[in-house]
Structures are given as C-alpha cells and as structure tokens.
Length: 118
Image (cartoon, rainbow, N blue to C red; front, side, top):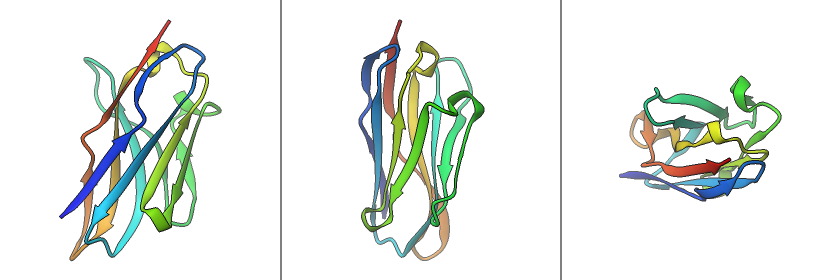
C-alpha cells in the first residue's frame, strides 16, 4: 500500500506565504513525477506545478514567479513554497505521484486546504 499525506495548509492573509509538504510512504521502489494540483470551490481540479525525479519543474502560468516546487528524493517528499498568496489561490491542494510498487501507478493524497483572506 502507498499513502500520500499532505500537510502545511491553513489560513493566511493575502500577500502571505505557506509551505506545503507531501510525503509518500509504503512499499515504494521508485517515484517519477510528483505534482501539485488544486481545486477551488465550484471549479475543476487544475495542475499547479510538477517536478520530475531529475528535478525539472514546470509551473502553471497563474503561479509562475510566486510558487516553487521542490523535492527531497531521500525522503520521498515534495514541497510547494507559496509566496505572495492571493485570494484566488484558495483551494484544496492535492499531491499526485507516479510510483513504482509492482507496477507504475498514479497515487493521490487526500488534500490540504489553503484559504487566503483578502
């Protein structure tokens, strides 16, 4: 069994910062891409940022220059540093990872809520 557990969400004022973490645990042989998604109330889930096992990253246009994704392969952990937060960043943030156990599969965390007040 593989589990992804997100942490670090909370309430912050506009302009503030938060750092999200997501740790994968279980009988993991390898992890390729790790990705942060978010889903705002009444909206579809959208990709925020992803990072490959080699450290290549890509961010959504809406968060470029404000959010930074990074990972610690030794800890099976991905981070999302979020600066200059805006009320429109309010959403549940989900972690997704492409993991090899017996087969390569995508796994999801349960999400962590980020609320940005104006």
